[in-house]
Image (cartoon, rainbow, N blue to C red; front, side):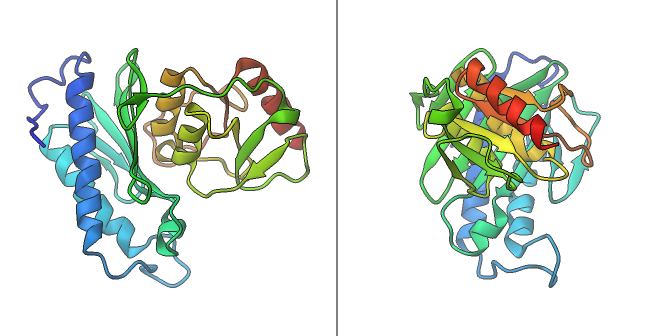
Length: 261
Protein backbone atom coordinates (compact mmCIF):
# COMPACT_ATOMS: atom_id res chain seq x y z
CA UNK A 1 0.00 0.00 0.00
CA UNK A 2 1.37 3.41 -0.93
CA UNK A 3 1.29 6.09 1.74
CA UNK A 4 3.03 9.26 2.81
CA UNK A 5 3.89 10.71 6.20
CA UNK A 6 1.23 13.05 7.53
CA UNK A 7 3.54 15.30 9.54
CA UNK A 8 3.22 18.02 6.92
CA UNK A 9 -0.53 17.86 6.55
CA UNK A 10 -1.99 17.18 9.98
CA UNK A 11 -1.89 20.88 10.85
CA UNK A 12 -5.31 20.92 9.21
CA UNK A 13 -8.19 18.51 9.64
CA UNK A 14 -9.28 18.13 6.02
CA UNK A 15 -7.13 15.04 5.58
CA UNK A 16 -9.59 12.19 6.10
CA UNK A 17 -8.53 10.24 3.03
CA UNK A 18 -4.88 10.48 4.06
CA UNK A 19 -5.80 9.38 7.56
CA UNK A 20 -7.78 6.40 6.30
CA UNK A 21 -4.77 5.29 4.29
CA UNK A 22 -2.57 5.36 7.38
CA UNK A 23 -5.19 3.71 9.61
CA UNK A 24 -5.55 0.89 7.10
CA UNK A 25 -1.79 0.52 6.91
CA UNK A 26 -1.64 0.27 10.70
CA UNK A 27 -4.39 -2.38 10.73
CA UNK A 28 -2.58 -4.36 8.05
CA UNK A 29 0.68 -4.11 10.00
CA UNK A 30 -1.06 -5.62 13.03
CA UNK A 31 -2.35 -8.53 10.97
CA UNK A 32 1.08 -9.13 9.46
CA UNK A 33 2.72 -9.08 12.88
CA UNK A 34 0.15 -11.48 14.32
CA UNK A 35 0.50 -13.91 11.41
CA UNK A 36 3.76 -15.12 12.96
CA UNK A 37 2.52 -15.04 16.56
CA UNK A 38 2.83 -18.33 18.40
CA UNK A 39 1.92 -17.37 21.96
CA UNK A 40 -1.64 -16.07 22.35
CA UNK A 41 -1.68 -16.47 26.10
CA UNK A 42 -1.49 -14.02 28.98
CA UNK A 43 1.76 -12.22 29.70
CA UNK A 44 1.25 -12.93 33.41
CA UNK A 45 -1.18 -15.36 35.03
CA UNK A 46 -4.21 -13.42 36.21
CA UNK A 47 -3.15 -10.32 34.26
CA UNK A 48 -5.02 -8.39 31.61
CA UNK A 49 -2.51 -8.23 28.74
CA UNK A 50 -1.90 -11.00 26.25
CA UNK A 51 1.29 -11.53 24.29
CA UNK A 52 -0.59 -10.80 21.07
CA UNK A 53 -1.81 -7.48 22.49
CA UNK A 54 1.78 -6.29 22.86
CA UNK A 55 2.87 -7.52 19.42
CA UNK A 56 -0.14 -5.86 17.80
CA UNK A 57 0.43 -2.63 19.71
CA UNK A 58 4.06 -2.35 18.62
CA UNK A 59 3.09 -2.84 14.98
CA UNK A 60 0.30 -0.26 15.03
CA UNK A 61 2.23 2.38 16.99
CA UNK A 62 5.22 2.12 14.64
CA UNK A 63 3.08 2.98 11.61
CA UNK A 64 1.14 5.76 13.31
CA UNK A 65 4.22 7.36 14.85
CA UNK A 66 6.06 7.34 11.52
CA UNK A 67 3.07 9.13 9.97
CA UNK A 68 3.39 12.01 12.44
CA UNK A 69 0.35 11.10 14.50
CA UNK A 70 -0.16 10.98 18.23
CA UNK A 71 -1.40 7.70 19.69
CA UNK A 72 -3.58 6.70 22.62
CA UNK A 73 -3.37 2.91 22.92
CA UNK A 74 -4.97 0.52 25.35
CA UNK A 75 -1.68 -1.33 25.65
CA UNK A 76 0.96 1.41 25.78
CA UNK A 77 -0.86 4.61 26.71
CA UNK A 78 -0.35 8.08 25.27
CA UNK A 79 2.34 8.87 22.71
CA UNK A 80 3.11 12.40 21.44
CA UNK A 81 0.13 14.27 22.91
CA UNK A 82 1.48 17.48 21.37
CA UNK A 83 0.62 16.32 17.85
CA UNK A 84 -2.61 17.79 16.40
CA UNK A 85 -4.14 14.44 15.42
CA UNK A 86 -4.27 11.53 17.87
CA UNK A 87 -5.26 7.99 16.90
CA UNK A 88 -7.11 6.10 19.61
CA UNK A 89 -6.27 2.44 19.04
CA UNK A 90 -7.23 -0.90 20.44
CA UNK A 91 -4.74 -3.19 18.69
CA UNK A 92 -6.82 -6.27 19.52
CA UNK A 93 -10.39 -5.47 20.53
CA UNK A 94 -11.64 -8.79 21.89
CA UNK A 95 -8.30 -10.11 23.14
CA UNK A 96 -9.85 -13.04 25.01
CA UNK A 97 -11.82 -14.07 21.92
CA UNK A 98 -8.62 -13.95 19.88
CA UNK A 99 -6.73 -16.01 22.45
CA UNK A 100 -9.37 -18.73 22.28
CA UNK A 101 -9.78 -18.78 18.51
CA UNK A 102 -13.20 -17.14 18.53
CA UNK A 103 -13.59 -15.14 15.29
CA UNK A 104 -15.02 -11.95 16.83
CA UNK A 105 -12.11 -9.56 17.39
CA UNK A 106 -10.78 -6.56 15.56
CA UNK A 107 -8.16 -3.89 15.15
CA UNK A 108 -9.92 -0.62 16.02
CA UNK A 109 -8.51 2.82 15.20
CA UNK A 110 -10.08 6.29 15.36
CA UNK A 111 -8.25 9.50 14.43
CA UNK A 112 -9.22 12.51 16.55
CA UNK A 113 -8.64 16.15 15.70
CA UNK A 114 -9.40 19.15 17.85
CA UNK A 115 -13.04 19.06 16.77
CA UNK A 116 -13.61 15.35 17.22
CA UNK A 117 -13.37 12.11 15.23
CA UNK A 118 -12.04 12.47 11.68
CA UNK A 119 -11.68 8.92 10.38
CA UNK A 120 -11.97 5.36 11.66
CA UNK A 121 -11.09 1.82 10.64
CA UNK A 122 -12.35 -1.32 12.38
CA UNK A 123 -10.93 -4.44 10.76
CA UNK A 124 -11.87 -8.03 11.58
CA UNK A 125 -9.02 -10.31 10.45
CA UNK A 126 -11.04 -13.45 11.12
CA UNK A 127 -13.89 -12.50 8.78
CA UNK A 128 -12.19 -10.00 6.45
CA UNK A 129 -14.77 -7.32 7.25
CA UNK A 130 -13.16 -3.89 7.06
CA UNK A 131 -15.30 -1.00 8.26
CA UNK A 132 -14.24 2.54 7.34
CA UNK A 133 -15.74 5.93 8.12
CA UNK A 134 -14.82 9.52 7.40
CA UNK A 135 -16.50 12.45 9.10
CA UNK A 136 -19.16 13.63 6.66
CA UNK A 137 -18.24 10.89 4.19
CA UNK A 138 -20.40 7.95 5.25
CA UNK A 139 -19.45 4.47 6.41
CA UNK A 140 -18.48 1.39 4.42
CA UNK A 141 -17.82 -2.31 4.83
CA UNK A 142 -15.32 -3.61 2.30
CA UNK A 143 -16.02 -0.57 0.15
CA UNK A 144 -19.82 -0.85 0.17
CA UNK A 145 -21.98 1.69 2.01
CA UNK A 146 -23.68 0.38 5.15
CA UNK A 147 -26.93 1.42 6.81
CA UNK A 148 -28.58 0.37 10.08
CA UNK A 149 -31.77 -1.67 10.31
CA UNK A 150 -35.14 0.12 10.56
CA UNK A 151 -36.00 -1.48 13.92
CA UNK A 152 -37.79 1.00 16.17
CA UNK A 153 -39.27 -1.16 18.94
CA UNK A 154 -37.26 -2.85 21.68
CA UNK A 155 -39.56 -5.86 21.65
CA UNK A 156 -38.38 -6.60 18.08
CA UNK A 157 -34.71 -5.84 18.62
CA UNK A 158 -31.61 -8.03 18.68
CA UNK A 159 -29.32 -6.31 21.19
CA UNK A 160 -25.66 -6.91 22.05
CA UNK A 161 -24.25 -6.32 25.52
CA UNK A 162 -20.92 -5.50 27.00
CA UNK A 163 -21.29 -7.17 30.36
CA UNK A 164 -24.71 -8.51 31.20
CA UNK A 165 -27.85 -6.76 32.50
CA UNK A 166 -29.22 -7.59 35.92
CA UNK A 167 -32.65 -8.26 34.44
CA UNK A 168 -34.45 -8.70 31.14
CA UNK A 169 -35.62 -5.33 29.88
CA UNK A 170 -37.68 -6.24 26.87
CA UNK A 171 -35.41 -7.23 24.00
CA UNK A 172 -36.44 -9.91 21.48
CA UNK A 173 -33.02 -11.57 21.50
CA UNK A 174 -29.57 -10.74 22.86
CA UNK A 175 -25.92 -11.45 22.10
CA UNK A 176 -22.84 -10.98 24.26
CA UNK A 177 -20.03 -11.16 21.72
CA UNK A 178 -16.98 -9.72 23.47
CA UNK A 179 -15.69 -7.01 21.14
CA UNK A 180 -17.46 -3.66 21.47
CA UNK A 181 -15.97 -2.04 18.35
CA UNK A 182 -17.31 -4.85 16.17
CA UNK A 183 -20.63 -4.85 18.04
CA UNK A 184 -21.06 -1.17 17.19
CA UNK A 185 -20.16 -1.80 13.55
CA UNK A 186 -22.78 -4.55 13.49
CA UNK A 187 -25.35 -1.95 14.59
CA UNK A 188 -24.13 0.39 11.86
CA UNK A 189 -24.49 -2.29 9.20
CA UNK A 190 -27.84 -3.71 10.31
CA UNK A 191 -26.70 -7.07 11.72
CA UNK A 192 -27.64 -5.92 15.23
CA UNK A 193 -30.32 -3.44 16.25
CA UNK A 194 -28.69 -2.13 19.41
CA UNK A 195 -25.73 -2.21 21.77
CA UNK A 196 -25.78 -1.53 25.51
CA UNK A 197 -22.84 -1.32 27.89
CA UNK A 198 -24.03 -3.11 31.01
CA UNK A 199 -20.62 -3.34 32.64
CA UNK A 200 -20.02 -1.88 36.08
CA UNK A 201 -17.25 0.53 35.11
CA UNK A 202 -18.10 1.35 31.51
CA UNK A 203 -15.80 1.36 28.50
CA UNK A 204 -12.56 3.15 27.64
CA UNK A 205 -12.22 5.39 24.55
CA UNK A 206 -10.36 2.73 22.56
CA UNK A 207 -13.25 0.32 23.12
CA UNK A 208 -15.85 2.40 21.32
CA UNK A 209 -14.52 5.40 19.35
CA UNK A 210 -13.84 3.52 16.11
CA UNK A 211 -17.28 1.91 16.16
CA UNK A 212 -18.89 5.17 17.24
CA UNK A 213 -17.81 7.03 14.10
CA UNK A 214 -18.85 4.11 11.89
CA UNK A 215 -22.29 4.17 13.55
CA UNK A 216 -22.72 7.91 13.23
CA UNK A 217 -21.67 8.00 9.58
CA UNK A 218 -23.93 5.05 8.74
CA UNK A 219 -26.93 6.84 10.28
CA UNK A 220 -27.18 4.92 13.56
CA UNK A 221 -27.50 6.66 16.92
CA UNK A 222 -24.99 6.60 19.79
CA UNK A 223 -25.24 8.18 23.23
CA UNK A 224 -23.59 8.10 26.62
CA UNK A 225 -25.95 6.88 29.33
CA UNK A 226 -25.78 10.11 31.33
CA UNK A 227 -25.08 12.49 28.47
CA UNK A 228 -21.35 12.75 29.21
CA UNK A 229 -18.78 13.67 26.57
CA UNK A 230 -17.64 10.57 24.66
CA UNK A 231 -14.69 11.93 22.68
CA UNK A 232 -11.91 11.38 25.20
CA UNK A 233 -8.13 11.30 25.19
CA UNK A 234 -7.61 10.25 28.82
CA UNK A 235 -6.47 6.63 29.33
CA UNK A 236 -8.38 6.26 32.60
CA UNK A 237 -11.70 7.68 31.41
CA UNK A 238 -14.75 5.42 31.16
CA UNK A 239 -18.15 5.90 29.58
CA UNK A 240 -21.36 3.86 29.36
CA UNK A 241 -22.22 3.67 25.67
CA UNK A 242 -25.61 2.87 24.17
CA UNK A 243 -26.19 2.59 20.41
CA UNK A 244 -29.26 1.87 18.30
CA UNK A 245 -30.39 1.61 14.73
CA UNK A 246 -33.07 4.29 15.17
CA UNK A 247 -33.70 7.28 17.43
CA UNK A 248 -36.80 5.68 18.93
CA UNK A 249 -34.99 2.48 19.80
CA UNK A 250 -32.14 4.47 21.34
CA UNK A 251 -34.53 6.19 23.74
CA UNK A 252 -36.00 2.84 24.79
CA UNK A 253 -32.56 1.35 25.35
CA UNK A 254 -31.39 4.35 27.36
CA UNK A 255 -34.49 4.22 29.55
CA UNK A 256 -34.08 0.49 30.11
CA UNK A 257 -30.38 0.81 30.94
CA UNK A 258 -31.02 3.70 33.37
CA UNK A 259 -33.63 1.61 35.14
CA UNK A 260 -30.94 -0.97 35.91
CA UNK A 261 -29.01 1.63 37.90
